[in-house]
Image 1 (cartoon, rainbow, N blue to C red):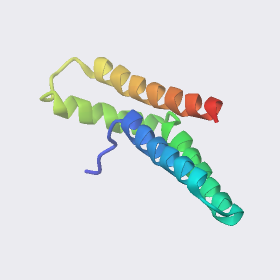
Image 2 (image 1 turned 90 degrees about the vertical axis):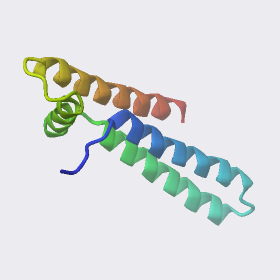
Image 3 (image 1 turned 180 degrees about the vertical axis):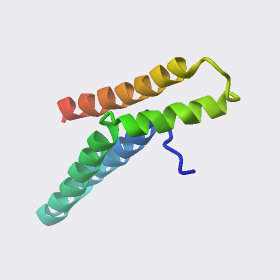
Length: 102
């Protein structure tokens, strides 16, 4: 079963990579290189925003993973669903925050 992993972690990873490219672009000596790096940075940010977008199927998949990680207890499905939703909201907030900054 493919892992849906914590969306916030995945988004944070993409955004950290984008920030490294931003720092690299500052060191570039020519305009063409700077433009290419900027394009890569924007692509990573767009991927982060898309990944952070809530999706019922991915929320369901993440809730099931959380349920399995907790030993498959009965009667806690809403708790795990809300936790998965919260992870997506946090990822979405992180992506939006980065969008607002840059």
